[in-house]
Amino acid sequence: MKTSEIALIPTPRVVTFAADGKTAPARGKPAVSVDPAASAHEEGYVLDISADGTVVIKGHDEAGAFYGLQTFTQLARQCEKSGVLPVVHIEDWPRFRWRGLMLDPARYFLTLDFLKRYVDLAAQYKLNRLHLHLTDDLGWTIEILQYPELTDMTRWPMTPASRNRGVYTQAELRELVAYAAERYVVVMPEIEMPGHNGIPAWALREQVLCSNNPCRDRATPWDENETYKWTEPCAASPTTQAVYENILREVLDVFPGPYIHLGADEYFGLAWAQCPECQALVQRVNLRQGETDELKRLFSNCLGSRDKYLVYRHLMTRMCDFVAAQGRQPVLWDDLAWRGTFPAKAVIMQWHYEGGHDAWQRIATPENPAAEAARAGRDAIIAPYSHLYFDLNSTLEAVHSLDPMPAGLSAPEQARILGPHAPLWNQPQLEMDARAFPRLYALAEIGWSPASPQDWAGFSHRVERHEAQRLR
Ligand SMILES: [Zn+2]
Image 1 (cartoon, rainbow, N blue to C red):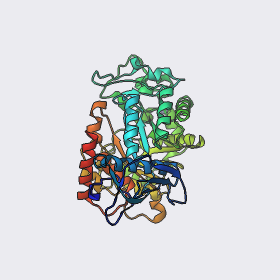
Image 2: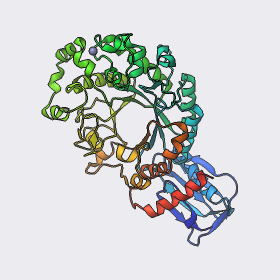
Image 3: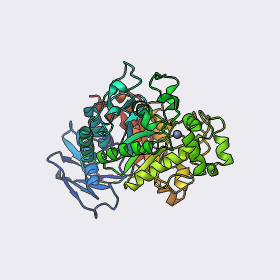
Image 4: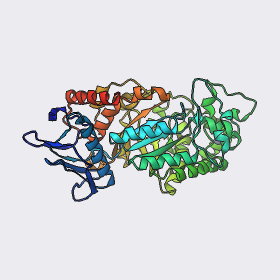
C-alpha cells in the first residue's frame, strides 16, 4: 500500500505518515474518546494509527470524535484490499462551522428514507446542516395540526401528474431530526413567506390574504401564470399574523435547532399596493421614511409593485422578531430590499453574487450580499447560484475553486461568514444523486479544508477514487 493511494475528502489539516512509509496491521476497532485537550478546535479531532495497529481517535467534542471516525472509515475502506493501514498522525478541524445542503421536497416529494440517506452521505463528508425547503406554491409538506387544510393535497391548486407529492407527519420529521442529530447534522426547516405562499393563500385564503385580493373569491380558478403573483399574505391583518405565528410555533416545536428559514425571496407586492389595510399601515407606521434614492433606483424596474420593499421589510421584520422572541434565529434569502438594514437577529443566506443578475428586481446585484450582511453585523451563509446551486450546471472545478470567504472583510466580519451551502432545487428523488455528485465532494472540501493550496489536480484524482467507491 502506498500513502499516495490514500484519498481523503475533505483534506485534513495535518497528515503525517511515518517517515519510512511504515504500515500497521488493520485490526480491531478504533478507541474513540472526547478529549478537549487533544484538539483545541470545535469539531476537531486527532487520529493516530500506531505501528502495532492501535487506532486512537480523540475529539475536541462529540462531533470531533464523530468526524475522526469518518476519516478513519475512509482510510480503512481504501486499505481493505491490502489488509494494512498506514502508520499516520492526523490533526484536523473545519475551516467553517456551517457546511450545508438544501433539498426541496415541496417541489418533488422526497421520502423519509431518502432524507436519511442524504443525512448519511452528508455526515460521511463532514457536512453538518440539512436545510429542507418544506413549503412552496406546489406543495406544503409538513403537517400543521392547527391547519389540516394545508396538507390536504386535494386542495393544492397546482398538481402536475409528473410530480411526486406527499406530506411528512410531525412524528416523521422528529424522527429525521433525531436521526440527523446522531450524525451531528442539524436540520433546518424552511417555511416560505411572503412569496411562494400558494398553499396558505389557496387553502386559508380568508384568513391570510388582503381583504380585496382577487384570489379570495372562491369562484376564481388558480391560473398557473397569474395567481402566484397574488399569494402574498396581508401585512396589516392581525388574523394573518396569528396564522403564521401559529404555524411557526408548531414548526419550531418539531425542529429544535437554532435556525428556521423564512424564505423571504421573490415577492410581487401587487396585493399590498391595492389593499386599504396595507396602505393604511404604510401611512400609520410611516414606512415611506425607509425610502431612499438607492432603493427607488434598485426597484425602478422590478417585477410587481415598485415600492413593495416597504411592506416586505415591515412584514419580514415582524416575523423575524417573532422567531427571535422564541429564542431562535431566522434565516432569510438575501434581497435588495435590505441594503444593510437587516432585521436584528436575521442570518442572511447569500444566493445572488456581486454583478450577477437579479431576475426579480431586473438589475445587477450591486454588492456581495454576504459581505453586506457581515459588514452590518449579521451572520451570512454562502450559497451563490453561480457556483452552489447544484440544480444548475456549475462544474466540479467551479465549485472547488470557490472561496466561500468574501474578499475585503475585516477579521470580525470574517467571523460572521458561517460557511458554504448548496441548494438542490426542484429535483425528483431519482435524479438527485446525479445532481449532487460529484459536486458534493467539492462542497465538503471548501467547507472543511484550508483555503490553500488549491490543489485541483490532486482533488480531482481523489474524487475519482470516491466516485468509484460510491458507484461500486
Ligand atoms: Zn393587506
